[in-house]
Length: 155
Image (cartoon, rainbow, N blue to C red; front, side):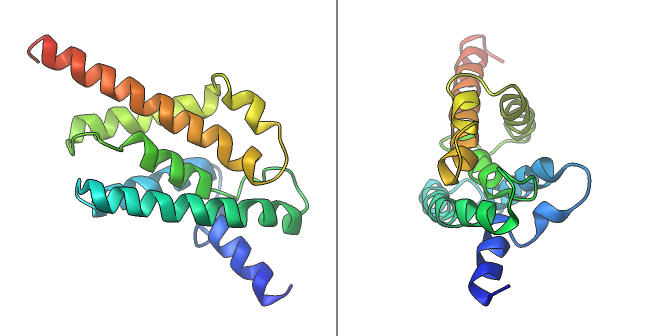
């Protein structure tokens, strides 16, 4: 394996987090959550981190798929990292929203609402990254609605 191939796999598996056993997608989501927590609600840093992760994800995930010889390999988790960062974009830095957001994203990533399911069927980076981007957008929208509704209800 060439050094460049190792770099693609390193990035796509988010520093080999995707090789943790049983639930690599959840571990990737936790990595995205850790980044969000480390950025402490700073939207400028969140946007910067999101764009870097999206760039690296599109750059590496399709290559990792080729290298590993499997469509959307489970060890590729940079897509979950990106999805979590999208989930928490413009969301208040509060424990209850963090817990709800994590659970909603994992649900959306599992259920794959339109057009996520169709995107997942595509080969390459768009197939790997696309469904988690959609799951992140839907999760963010759910959180925005929940926050508006609870503030309207005085909770």
